[in-house]
Every structure is written in C-alpha cells, then in structure tokens.
Image (tube, rainbow, N blue to C red; front, top):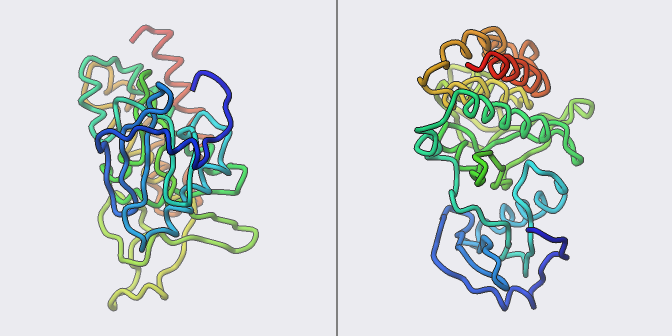
Amino acid sequence: MDSCHQWLTCSDVENVEVKEIIGIGAVKVVYRATWEGFKVAYSKLNNPAYIADFIHGLNMLRMLHPTKHIVQLIGFCNDDIILTEYHKYGNAVNITDKLTTSTIQMRLTLCLNYALILQYLHNSPIGTRVMCDSNDISKLLSQFLITEHMELLLNDVDALPEVNLKMNQSIKCGHRELIGTFVAPEQLWPFLHEFHDEEMPGYDEKTDIWKAASVCDYFLGNISGSDVVRYNLFSVHKLCKSIKPEMRPSAADLVMEYQRVLDEIQSNDL
C-alpha cells in the first residue's frame, strides 16, 4: 500500500470486488480482488476442518508485523477472510521462468533475500519460528510471492511453529513421516521399526539452514558466473549440510556470507 490505513474490517470487506482464483490449497482459496481501486489478495477459508490453521496464519500475520519480509496484512473478517497485498507475479514456484535473462548478481540477491527472511523468522518478535511447509523445493517456494522488484516475500505463514531451547521446546513438522534428501537428517525417522509420531524426536530451526544451501543452489542455476559463486559459497554451504545441526551456521551467518560474495562479484563486475 502507498499510504497508512487501518486494517480493513467486515464493513470494508463488503465493498471488496472478488475476481478470479489465483491460488488454492487445503486451507484457503485465494482470489484477486479490488478495494477502492486497489488490487488485493482475498483469502477465504476453503475447508472448515482447517479453521485452526487459517486463524493461526492470520495471527502470525498480525504478530509478525511490521516487517518488509512478510506479505502485508490489509484486513480480515470473521476468522474466515483475510486481505493481503497483491503481487501480479504470484508465488515463487516458477521463479526460474522469470530469471531467464537475469544476471548472477540478481540470482545471488535472491539467496540473500531468502536468508534475510530466515534471519527474521529465527529472531522474530514472537520467538524463533521454523518454516514447516518446506518438505521439497516446490512446496517451499510456494510459500513465497515474487515482488515486481524480483524479491521474495513470505506469504504463507500457516505453519511456523516456535522453538524455545531455554524451555526445552523443540518442534515437529506435522504428524507424518518425512522422507527425501531435501529435508534435514533430523527430520527423518531414525528407527528401524515402523513410524510412530509420538516417538519421533523434535528438532529446531537448523532444519531451515540445511535446506537453505539447496534453495540458493536452485536460484543460482547454471548461468555465466554461477560456478564462481558456488566456489565462493562452497564452505558455508558445506557447513549447512552438516549432519549435526549445531555445526550448521545461523541465518545471520548466511546473510553475511551471501552479502560478502555479492559485494565481491559486484566490485569485480562478474
């Protein structure tokens, strides 16, 4: 939004013109809409069985602001409608299609952008928050929007559980067994017998760091200069893939490394 305005309420929502569907999931359906000439995203609860998740997402939007890293909340009504800022490029699942003419600086800036979002979540005003809807690269990218400046903006905050190591409070992402190499090793079932959710050990925000190396590698692609950037990031990305979570860098460490390499390639005009 280009000016300060109180959150819209139910009386304002009545004046919203709902257009076409731009996204749909188990929890909500998202429409392009307009309010007094402004384009907005109109999210409607899709299944009453997931109302707790919907309300949690709304509460996250309310409590995590103000920040430039998360989509802006514009209004809400009756715990089943949320209005947020609209971005025409949509979610980041197909971001590589938008990067066909990009430079390596632009792609590394996305790595930095992503690390800054993790840094904010891991040090948020409401505690250390972990991105749980991120079991593969497509699912992770679907949680973000692409701005007109080709930056990432966290959009889906329905699954951001809190880690509190002082209170011995770890997290688990869902109640089903996770598989694959994209998720961190500590998120995999560690026993030989059949999976039982109650026996699954918890984990912390370092699961986000394990995935960050793969996310950045995906952003870099195979364009001119990507091999040089990968070489410069080899050490920190190797640490991100440490089996022991405590050996992995923090999101703040990633931000510093990405910024360092970005400064170097810009100064060398790579």
